[in-house]
Image (cartoon, rainbow, N blue to C red):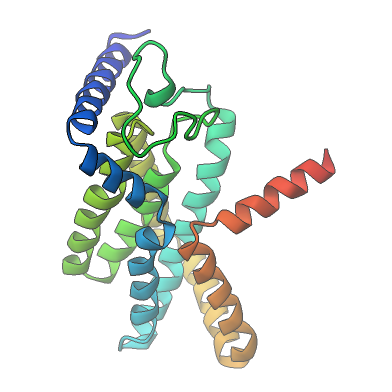
Length: 236
């Protein structure tokens, strides 16, 4: 293992150990973090409302293509968030890493996320993408989104031992990069224009599908991921 990787591992382990001590010393904070980590609607509702508000915000000819192109990046981040963990080597979460021997924080099941790889964080990827979407819509709303995500989403997962710090950082960078990419690619501008033509020509089809997409986001794409898992079991 290279010296850089050893340094990252040392930082990860030190951070996880310190936060585990904090969770044990402050059980109320740990239980609040456990609630926040499990409340999908709490995590996504603000972003769903932001997308809806931006869609109707004038000038629509400027904001709507922006919303669509950024949303393509969010979707790309979610797809990568499912593919990369399956391709990369398994990494045990801090809570289940025998070398760390962390105590289970109050409010957390000892088997929480057992068997699921830690790297990269899918929460890091999704909400990294959503933060960049928020910044694309406005600097002020972007900073509000960033503070909310760091405090309300990423910190609880670190505190509870669900992720190492590098899991979150790398995941957030990948998710942010996905949206930055789709905001720059000319192909996504073409795709957004096509979708807007469909919105004007077939609103009765466009808006129900858009509501379905927002519902998936509100539920952290859990129903969609469950459908893929069931389909894979059937095909196997």
